[in-house]
Image 1 (cartoon, rainbow, N blue to C red):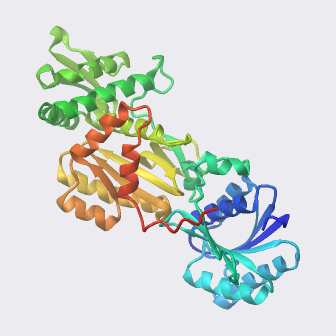
Image 2 (image 1 turned 180 degrees about the horizontal axis):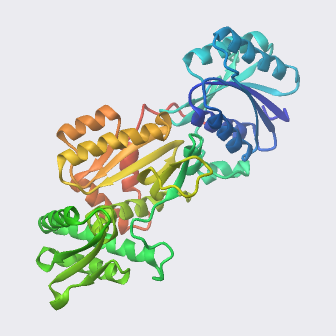
Image 3 (image 1 turned 90 degrees about the vertical axis):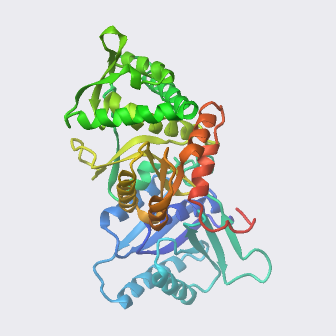
Length: 444
């Protein structure tokens, strides 16, 4: 393949734009960064802004992307003629590598495209397809050679800097994948500390979160009572926020350093006489939010951000906003943590709740969020201090939500938070969302 200095790829895209992005980058890596790769694409049934998002993302990474937008053809025959024209145009270059990419096509479009390519191209070509379940790109030769490798599996991760470095291209991050669907990441600050005057805010929150985690593991009974007291305070606060008094008897001794951290950040202050604390905020922000479950989000995101062999972003409190140009709107949805791994977008939801109905409703919201974020390329994961079992486990299974939960989760977090090379949480998340077995050892 590397003798040709150009590669022309034809694709009929009518289903999954994220898959087309991954396969195009994997194919470019296979032929070599010095080979010009040009995609001729018939976009059928996809919103124009999605098509433009794919084009922009790929061209920023060295793939020329020429799109023929579906002009509203209703008959399959008209679309077939459009694909046939792209195939004929590509075949005029007698020296280029030819390839058909079916990653962004549904079953019918993929089958028809292959039949048309076999008729239009009189020389061997490649067939490129992305397997979302395995996270790999399959590159087959058509017709299959009598000798040699007929199929290769490119284990290419578009979000891994090590894989995209040979392309002299930036990795594909969470914001890039969400951008394909017209969404924009807007970091949320539930503590109101952005632009504050306290140095080392992130480190303060991390250490305070780790102290709460240690207490949850070493003093589970006291921690349960503490959590119940916080739930009562949260319900008593007005929606716009305010102050609430936490009695000293409700505070486990191990959480005292976390309260002092809240004081340094201006989120809490001691009550007179040393009998408790005044907490500032609301049920979804400030000190009450942090103590009820914000600490879990911070530990999970902090551990995950140090778990990869090569650095990649883990976005915490990731709000999402429709549209690429609006700047003054509030995010309409929020994920506790998002990151990419093996060409999937992992959407992590952290819950420190003990009410079954709340968790069931939250599973519904998480399923809806996965659909908003792209569906086929998304792995939603529930990280819960309460064990996922019974009705909640059945709902998670029905919604294809992975879960890591209960005392096992807390033990994993405690070990990972103290490790310089944490891996247990990431491995548990991957195992909870694993698809079918990986293919054989033939890799590119």
